Image 1 (tube, rainbow, N blue to C red):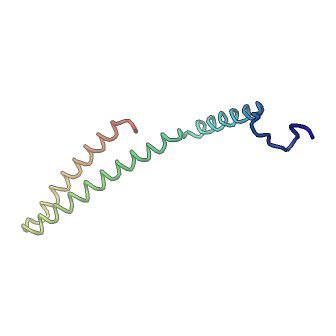
Image 2 (cartoon, one colour):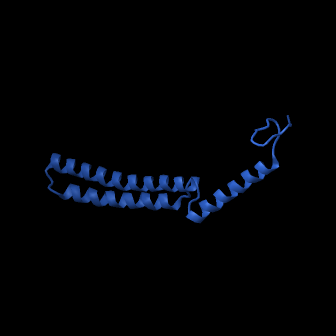
Image 3 (spheres, rainbow, N blue to C red):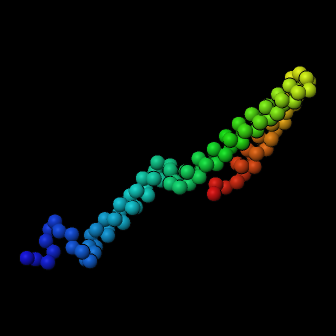
Length: 106
């Protein structure tokens, strides 16, 4: 019986052909990722930053509108509390979005 026959996986012996194949596969996957415009983990970081922007926008607007409505309801000031606080919420939301967009994704 020969030491290394075709179809057998010799344990402890590293085949240089397999190592070269693994290296070529990694390189091809890297090129394909770059060709698709994806950067792997960087894409996930961008999604995270986008989610922060959306949550800042929605949270500021909904929160300020709710507080404005409650002020109008409690003090009977008509729509003015809602309108003022909604514009304040918009300003806060844009400020947060500008701050978040100035950061580099982590």
